[in-house]
Structures are given as structure tokens and as C-alpha cells.
Length: 133
Image (cartoon, rainbow, N blue to C red; front, side, top):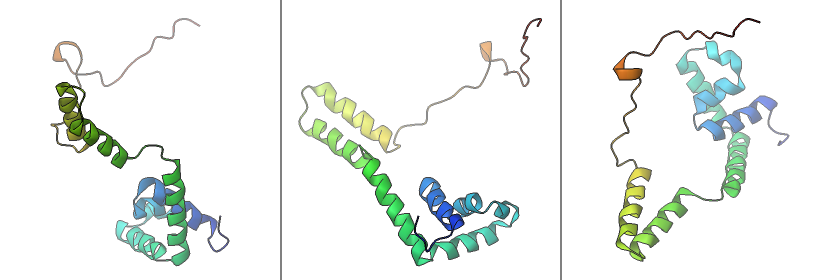
């Protein structure tokens, strides 16, 4: 931890790299901010992001995280494109295009049905019988 940063500033940096949202990171690092107006949190988070040492630490953390990633989205796309360009069989092209479409959100969302048997509503309360004991 760089000595120029306070513990809360360091916590903010870690939270920011984790969630990617300055206001949320500020709330995590400074719990009292949970009671503040969103505009106030946003202003304070923006001020913290403009601090040179804070920005430097965020970049360090991002670099460390990038080194830990063994497979990036870009590598996935390049691999799928190579399958399309040099397929072993025609079905490889279809499978690769299907996967690329899914990665980029081009597919219709999957439908998730939240109901009980035969479409009945799910129970709002579940009781568990622990037996006699």
C-alpha cells in the first residue's frame, strides 16, 4: 500500500477496480456515505478519483489484475474468428458464429420461468419440518 494513501483511499481503489463504479466504491470505503444523498456521494467520489495518487493506485491494481487474467475476451474472439477462417468442418463455423453472437449479446434473452408445477405461483413462505428433536 503506497504511503501517500490513507487506508480508506486504498479501500476505495480496491472497491473501484472491483465494481467499476466510483459512487459504489466510495460507499464501500466510507460506510457513513450510505446515509448521504447520491449527489453528495458522486461529488466526493469524483474528487477522490481526481487525486493523482488514487489514480496511480487504481492503475497499479488494474495492471495486477490484467496479469492474473489467463484468458481475455479479446483472445476468445480471436480464437473464434480463427475457427471461422479455418474450420475443420462446416458446423465449426456455425458454432463459432453462435458463440460470438452470445458473447456480444446479439441473442434474445433466455426466458426464465418463475412458477411452480403446472404454472402455479411459487410459495411466498417455505416451512421446513425438522422433525422431533
